Length: 135
Image (cartoon, rainbow, N blue to C red; front, side):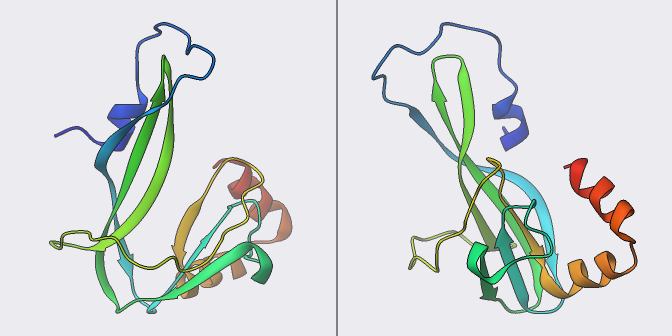
């Protein structure tokens, strides 16, 4: 089965033509995700710790989840076009929009809010920034 990282690894090919519509992939597995606290933050990682106007907080039952992504290809250029988080073993269905997330760096991530806060609190500013820059 192809994964999202597999999809994003592509051979150099033709450049997209002006006005070309992108081809969207199916949902592809990305990673397993453990939610312990029951609260997940979706945000641009550069805004860490999360800022209220740049994040969406979602209450989820604690447990094991699968993060999936959908890609979009424009000629030889492939990018992530969507992200979703499903209970392990469940099938995804369209749902309500839960909010808008500010994205300034072309990145988006999700984290268990309590686990992230606990880990971040153990780092001084320089260590925190070093970890953030490695994303």
